[in-house]
Length: 105
Image 1 (cartoon, rainbow, N blue to C red):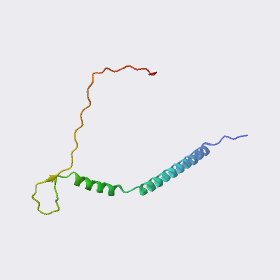
Image 2 (image 1 turned 45 degrees about the vertical axis):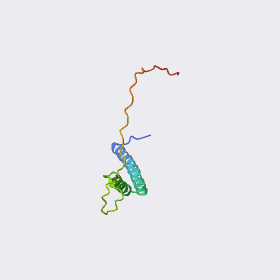
Image 3 (image 1 turned 90 degrees about the vertical axis):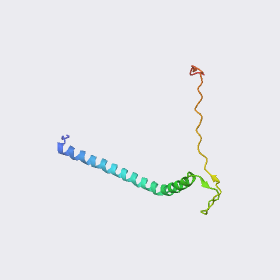
Image 4 (image 1 turned 30 degrees about the vertical axis):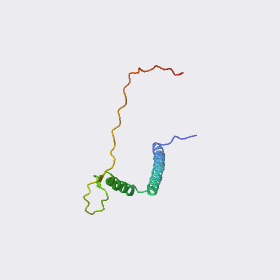
């Protein structure tokens, strides 16, 4: 004959199950964190590439440079500049009415 379990036994079993789930969740989170750190460590350093690109962009987008400018005095007056972006033409407006199609076409 089965005797009914007391409320405290059920509460103890519930707490034990919750503790087990909590431990599993904590373990999965810790494993994910370790994996994220491992991936981040193996990636190339973004600061080195960013600073190098920024320096080259700053040089290429600066004001016009004197041709043959080596730091000496050159009064030749010739300059070179980087090409600037040209605005694109807007899409053309057409008066063609929309065509109704069916799924079979």
